[in-house]
Length: 173
Ligand SMILES: [Zn+2]
Image 1 (cartoon, protein in one colour):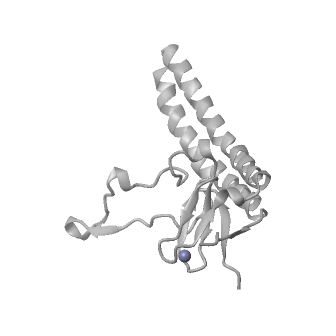
Image 2 (cartoon, rainbow, N blue to C red; image 1 turned 120 degrees about the horizontal axis):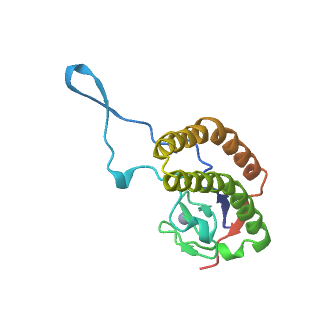
């Protein structure tokens, strides 16, 4: 048995099971109330760690002992349980770049949509048509979350799932 761990590029948007379920508390008159979550604990849009855009998607490392972590490409990590160490720069650069490109391509649509909405909002504000801004921005959000995001996300998941997982060998102690 070799000492091997598995590494897989994690998209950030990939994990659907991770989504926080709303918690309810009983309010006055037995009404269901959604529990407030402090802003700092709320989900980030796209569930991403800061720096993901510039440094590329995170790599999930599953240590042989069951410990898991997420690393940036090029990071080294020593498992706190069994002290095996892993070096993500052992992953072939070209394979990692493929994942990075897919992630980037799928990120362009929301960025483009956002840019267009903001440009239009600025345009309407400057031309004195503030009413249009109040209609336009909510509409853009609704269109994105209701219509465009689900198929966009499915396409992304499929593109990512076609990609390989790597066997990242633990370094000898
Ligand atoms: Zn371990």
